[in-house]
Image (cartoon, rainbow, N blue to C red):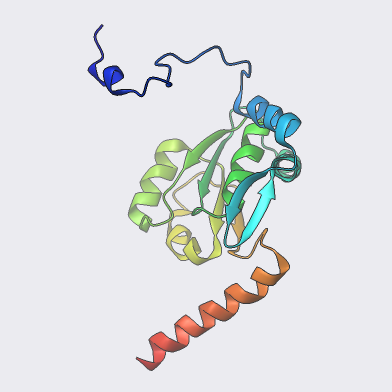
Length: 177
């Protein structure tokens, strides 16, 4: 097969992927923890989390999910924007062996409802700001537990103070206009 795009690759870029030693995404995370434990894994809103903390927090979420009854192949929906809570809930779900169903947090109730019904998700992580769109979908779905996250979860102490102030200022500006 002639893949013309390969001709466009820089000389130092191999067109073939070598063997991957990690068999699961959580194995890959643990490899990163072993090699780069104190390096930044994720950064959001002036707060960073290193690989070691990512693994630790993900395992804590996994333990909580197992306490709730999550087992292998349980479907967990994640309706979060790009905040630090997203990768933690994602890896935590994977540590349980769950199947993750991503839901765009900008979707409206009709779209969310279709996804929840089709996926048969039993648990969902949702940002508090998007709970209003989720709420009407709950009766039609198989959701057993809703885990509500806040924008300030996992942020540094400084940013936990700054973010609500900024939100308040934006709301005041909107009201005044």
